[in-house]
Length: 151
Image (cartoon, rainbow, N blue to C red; front, side, top):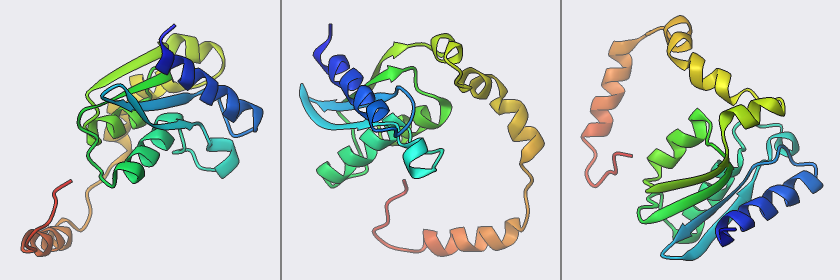
């Protein structure tokens, strides 16, 4: 068994034992060294965004003092949901290794596959543009700032 996936599984078990949430653990690795480990905290924090990958990414960013995790890989017990996958992309993580797929996750009662399949239709039905001109002004103000980071 891959040693980093073994750590992700152990992290998930730790979260389950503490009643923090589902069986999702993750490990961020750079150049063969563990940067951070995380697990699901959805139940513990009453926060639907506290997935294992998000927890590990937040800890890795804090440890490296950077929002850019270029050169990192992530090992996760489940195929990343759309939110986590987008966080992985925003963080510039270069490779994802996962244990279980979305069908496996669905079998134990999680909705990852439904989100993945339904996002395009939901975006059309839920999203409505309002006050674009005022928001464009905000964007213009930001664009004038020197030494900013567009992230």
